[in-house]
Length: 537
Image 1 (cartoon, rainbow, N blue to C red):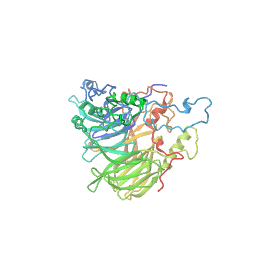
Image 2 (cartoon, helix red, strand yellow):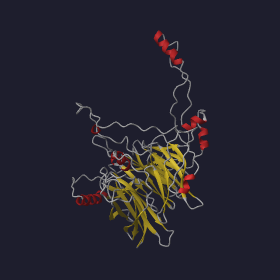
Image 3 (cartoon, rainbow, N blue to C red):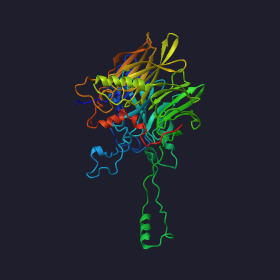
């Protein structure tokens, strides 16, 4: 098989730019002509010195390679080493004669983000409204990174790394406050934290308990003198007295784990794995809406009262994976996940306004695909796992119309819906794609003489359409990983493909397809299996 290139797993608009994460690198595109401006690549691993790590962002443009190093403030001494994964029975771990003994169901949730890349893969992107800063989350090292767009005098562009902060748990979703000064980060263990966008290294000098600057930078407390719990008055036997003397010779004990020393605050928590979080302003007040694996959508007040629950949107019977609040109609929330439907909520009252059958549209695509491939499957094999929801406003005959675009994991199609004034979703179009849709972002441009409403979609160029495990063969036609679509009236039509990066994020571990699958397709792992408890409303 030829050397494969990583597709883009995350897309995000950042002002007049589009940022796209491919493996552990980030490409930046101009929205004027969709040309590639620069590429930021993950720096090589280096040993930290006094809590400072040299990081040099590299770039597609030759002029960028002479940038000086950028300091990173970290919350741990170094990233944890890669964990060894126990092989399942199918991978040869079962001993002869052990058939039927102690078998366990295969479960790849523990390595759901293990991509097989040399550096941690980017799993979430966010950007400030002005477009100056980009925030990225990497699960494998539990980090949140902040970048800045820099345009140089010679006209070249660079995405400069400003800071890296290692969180207590793996972050999975990002949002920003109204003033773009605070990051809202949700992690897989159900907690939502706030931390300032811009990090000052002097924060490390304010740690409690009198810890030294070096220990503050590493996120650990200074060693404390070891004091045995026993004493000469409580120990009597000769053997125990000798053991007590040995314990007294120990002057230090291993450093204790501690919370990161940079500024961060716990806002709220779920009792289940968090999947998405959005911040919304309505009638002059700020709210945080969060979703989890246990079918819950929770509405909380904004900072600093995020611990106060305003209500819940209850009605999903499977995990909730994506949330979307339409612009100019911020009283509505569109949600999707493992259910067969897209839901429309009045989120402040917790009322389900309407829902539309998404599975029916997905089944049409998958049935056509099976016909083209001369294959067949069981009628009930199609499952929905919403991996993206995007909103765009279009000029219509009777004013502005709201359009919702949804994608489902492992399905090579875009599903286009009209959000009516009555808050109903009407299916108006299905766009077939040459590969599975991985991410989608809407881009409205009013800077030119002819305003446009574009959709950029990331396409899986590695797996076969409709499959999350089978790879394309050498004889298959190559697929461009980014495609541009534009609305003509209500109809979405293809425009062009986008030039991707030079692709040094090639897959070196081609013999480990399951690891790449876990990076690109991990939502189905959220679906509860037989025997797991479900919420009963």
